Image 1 (cartoon, rainbow, N blue to C red):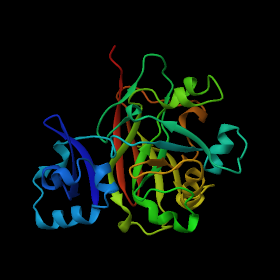
Image 2 (image 1 turned 30 degrees about the vertical axis):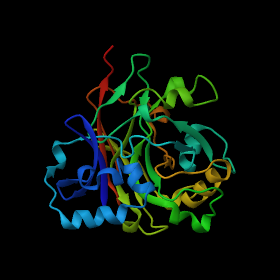
Image 3 (image 1 turned 180 degrees about the horizontal axis):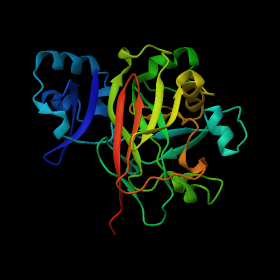
Length: 284
């Protein structure tokens, strides 16, 4: 099943996608689940599937203002330097443990919404990634049990303001400018993707493919990421883990390639779909 978060008459809703149509689950499930994060936390995804089976979707997906898949995650944990070609192009050393940083929810937009280039920099870079959403929370989750803690998978663009990222050895500033990342278009529930299934990730800018990798090329696998992160912090339903980008980022190309107003960036995961955003300048 594909689940989305969206605005309808300026009200945040969530729903299930069936082809080009959407069933608005918010009024049907009511107080049982006020948003997608709550639906996941209360383990009501099977109820959502049954509700979809019993009702006819009547909203048109193309007409909806999509929000980030989980608009209100408690945590967004990003894994850096998780593909060998990206480690090499970045000129950094391989780390035995995953390199981590955090994003805030205001740094994200949904599918079809504009990624915003701030006036402070023209070095807005793309990073295509696969994101997972935690379904079952926990602490010190073993790799063997990690797959059971995943609610589903989605696409992510870890948009980065490169000069601000590299002002210091800490990446927080460059990774958290307002509305610079993309998150969507939907959550594909874990029952549709087998544990350990090889997925292909690609990034296109204005139709030109700039990144391509498969999940079996990750340095730190998804179960290893879950095990490592949950060792030092409890994971909660709705938490997002962004699993790393492969080589080919614009900052390391010759000549360098950064996103500019009017550009269209697409992140595709074969088992999920396509996250598409257009770039605009921030109006101040």
